[in-house]
Image (cartoon, rainbow, N blue to C red; front, side):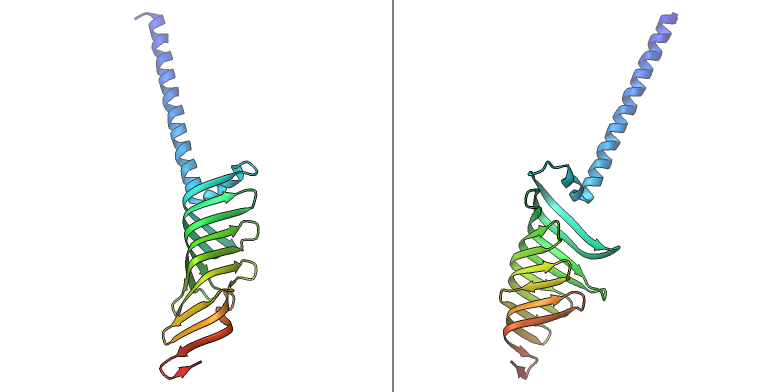
Length: 194
């Protein structure tokens, strides 16, 4: 075997091994990048140019403060607007976590998250549930700083032995108490009515 053939074979082997290593590195980079952005798509948002919008399908968002989860959101789709500092969601569900380890579930047709404040405006077939009650309304606002869910639209509150209708309401997630505001009509149990 000639010396030039040995060097030629070594060059081919080195080129093949280098190509394989580069290919494997690129594949792992794509997989890691996909996992990184698919679990937290909001990480992609700073990469969007100022004034741009981005559209995402099947999104999840978690809000926590001092290591304590305050709420989690899932939606069929979302559009993020850098100009407005807002994310618009369709077919969303939100789980709020109270200080006494209870969960409050919310579902609605659409919502808007103000990304700078964490406040959420939700409307369209809004349903809020926990173990004791179910509330229906057309529109609610969530104040992230105060942790209060508020509806200025009429609400219907149904419990195990009560059915109430009110002009508006507020739910304080810090104390897990609801306040019915304005005109309140309803029935408690079998004999008591308002």
